Image (cartoon, rainbow, N blue to C red; front, side, top):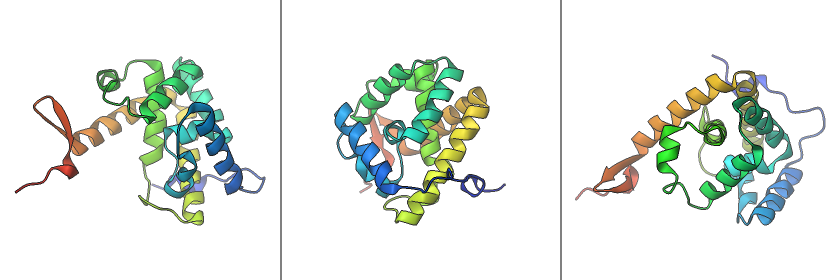
Length: 178
């Protein structure tokens, strides 16, 4: 199977990393989310996807296809970005609400087929940005199917990363065996 970013071409206008960084800063300031401009060094996250005009336009199409209100997706994404993940854990696990489905699509495209974690050089960010856009195009083409796959991917990933000790979720990589 061909890698997603290989088949996505950036729009004809020149790729402008500074413009993307500016969009991230503006969205962060407007929504009281700190440090979004750092997404140009690590790759977009769901809030970053909403901040960038091109990717936000694609999320709007996915939201429409899944019956979600964009303002609900924005509210949910911003809440999750600043730590509401545990407050929303039951709803996220069910994955039934349309706004949650759209968030799951955004979350999945930020990690699915991602080649490098951590700091990215400019060219690596550009390639990752292409990958995200290609996956968003796939989500537009089959929103229901993509949302279903995104939920499965996120649930599987969560099971690998967390375990429950008592009633407390613990990140597996933080568990120290003596």
